[in-house]
Image 1 (cartoon, rainbow, N blue to C red):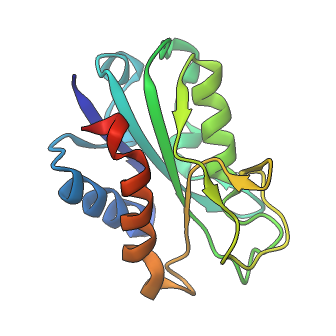
Image 2: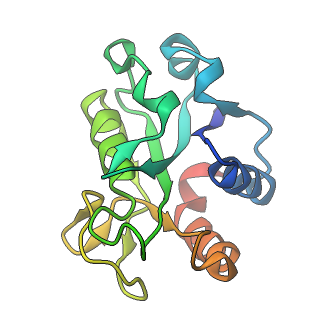
Length: 163
């Protein structure tokens, strides 16, 4: 089973999180969405995908320009993580992660790794379904000290799918 971590990062925070996740799971394929296409993504059995949220809940630029129509993730296990600013953009915190999760589910992905909203402070997010984030929500702008422990807790949850 082949696994890749795919990220879109403008300021480096999402890329750093992707690399930390890869190191902790022993995954060598860490790919920038700006450098790959749907065919490359389709070649993997399992995916962990990350994006940051920009503006009023918008995708990171490279994900925004990605053509999701050629993705075929039927039966594939996918987890998502997102970066956001829960203080300055409390009303759209990590909303791009919700958009990414929806696009991946529309391509047939089996999403794993939902995270409780407990312990987070924000007003609203498109990434929340049934009182849980669809994946791991991170905030390096205000809570960088929690990033590694949140990643560790999330990895314990998703490891059975990615080992």
